[in-house]
Length: 117
Image 1 (spheres, rainbow, N blue to C red):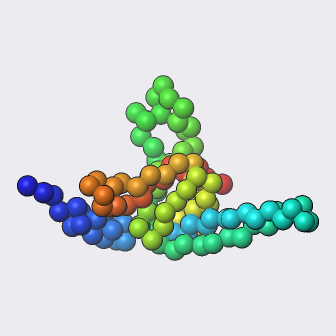
Image 2 (image 1 turned 45 degrees about the horizontal axis):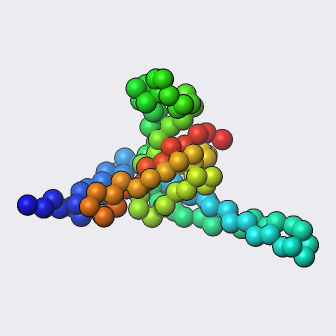
Image 3 (image 1 turned 180 degrees about the horizontal axis):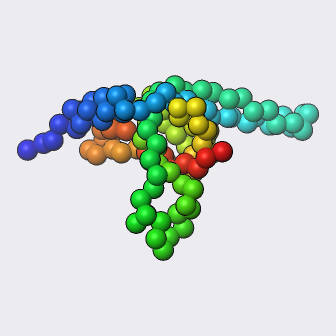
């Protein structure tokens, strides 16, 4: 018996779309020129939808989780990486860590631990 993870992915995306806010993920790629000795950053934006929640107290107790950390669940249009800037509903955050929720090779959503800027 198999589980229909594609249906779960569609349901997760529908919930994020209904209850989330407009989100922009900005990834800056830095290029170094040995000739000039300068580094140039080029930002690339990815648009989608996200929801932000406070971390649970149980996630913070006796751990290295900072009180300012929150978690964002993001639409599949964005694939966050540590160091990326994430704007959700007009509030800016920095991505600390991220991982896809991917049962049986089907990516359902992206989860990112974030801190406010």
